[in-house]
Amino acid sequence: MKRIPILIDTDPGVDDFFCIAVGGAFSEIFDLRAVTTIGGNNYTEVTTQNALDILSFLKVDAPVAAGATRFLTREFDEPAAKFHGSNGLGGLAIPHSPNKASSLPAWEMMYKVACECEGELVIVTVGPETNLALAIQKHPDMVGKVKKILAMGGSTTFGNITPYAEANIGNDPFAAKIVFESGIPVDMVGLNVTHMCPTDEALFDSFKKDARQDVIDFMRGLIRFRAFQPILHDAITISSLVDPDFIQWNVCNVHVETEDAEHFGQTVMQSGTMHRVAVGCEKERYYKVFENMINRYR
Ligand code: BDR
Ligand code: CA
Image (cartoon, rainbow, N blue to C red):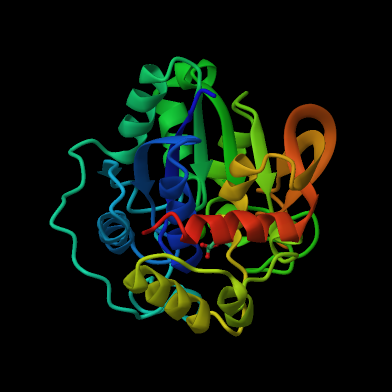
């Protein structure tokens, strides 16, 4: 089987850690071409260092490119320390990587990788979509060069930063609007589905684990930190590429609200065939992918 070339655009981030871990684990499925970073869960300098540290810790080889240091129309907010700890990784210590970020900014790395992959690239975006919007704006021909965007973001039901808006979309709705209207097909996995698959410590302990002890301990530490809300949104999202049928999708268009103040950042399904929005999932199948992922880190 031909491997899927992927680029992960991320703001690590507790659940982003697990997304990168899935992307790095299944090397027979994924050709991880690059990791690009954005601010969201923490500032871009912090999420960039975290991405470098995570890849080194997991012994996964991929270039890292730092992204935008502000959203399209405003500065970043404070780090989301309640959900990701003051360092973005649950306050846990992780060895400092000796590696440095690429000299290319995230949007140029996206474009370069998209050109190299000749229409096959899947961009997995699990943070605010600012870098993607910049890549599309600067390089309109990106549209024909990316096979699909797989996005953790939005919701068909409730939000998490407002009653209607989810963080990745709601932090930069103008960027998300550019992405959803670009002509690149998006598979959107939102809160309505990620909340169906909690990963708490009891579940983690029930997995059969034959992996590096430091990796198991770090993963358990992250999951313990998130005991109050054990939803690893970004890991669930990328797992839909490992087991393509565990999520049920609705084919539709997606409107991102940028005008109405109350609904600012909401994603609304509309009639059309441009995108797919996750509407259900079989969580046991996701847990199989997760357990399998852990045991790739020997
Ligand atoms: C999304 O926002 C971030 O806090 C998480 O990493 C995830 O990508 C969930 O709303
Ligand atoms: Ca994220």
